[in-house]
Length: 308
Ligand code: UDP
Image (cartoon, rainbow, N blue to C red; front, side):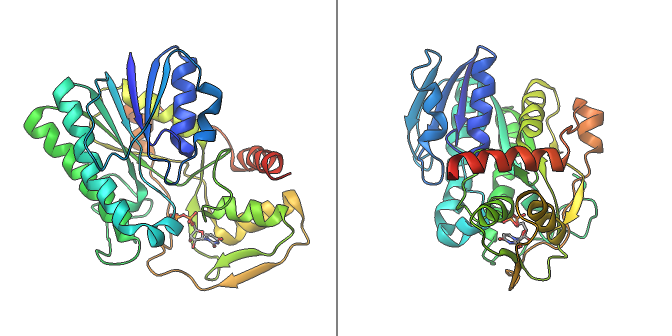
């Protein structure tokens, strides 16, 4: 089985590649390493079933694969401000280019969509049937609208060319190989705590997120790809907590004396995010298993290793 993984040098992509190679499959990774890192794949460079192609999927490329895992796109709000136009192009042109290959070679195509498509959701918890509430011109819209147009393209290819699509709506995910400086909340807090700095809370910290450990997510992606389910599916952990409680949890594991520093809440920052994962259980028999505390301890260990 040949797997093409776009964004394979990133956090989620590199974990996926590792799992596929360990299962004995062939993997071709495409990444422009704008926000990913080749170091994430160092271990596999000389593996006979692995090939790395440095390429930006905004430009077309012709590769034959049985399965395409389309993960490429900077995913942190920090990058939404830095590379908004590139992010829109990656989601539109990049997805289009990858769907072209999928329809040409009849590949199965898994789209890494996102909880971001729900925007400032009025549905709680977020169910797949909810159409979302997205600001079309805010600083997050390159990603939120980008993932929406990517989903739209997938369904048009399904309707017109019968492309075999899978749509994973991925909620906040964390774990080893997050970049210490990519601005996500868990990497920020752990990095700050290890450096003995105050933890930066945006707003009053009462906004919520639900965090899924990377191994659980990868398992969900693998099961979804093999399943026959071809509608959007939430993949995430439904253990919801306030950002303030997350800060206190991370402090308690590293240094309870650390201070909190309150900064303004970014515009359009969703206030409550929690996936409904009933469909994932019913349709593909998947649910996350790793508790937040355990995942946080594993992630802290990773950061302590790379930062010391
Ligand atoms: N956040 C925070 N401090 C930080 C980084 C993020 O309080 O140093 C907040 C952010 O405003 C948001 C939540 O944590 O409400 C999750 O942010 P992240 O960037 O990880 O992902 P998002 O879910 O917003 O895409």
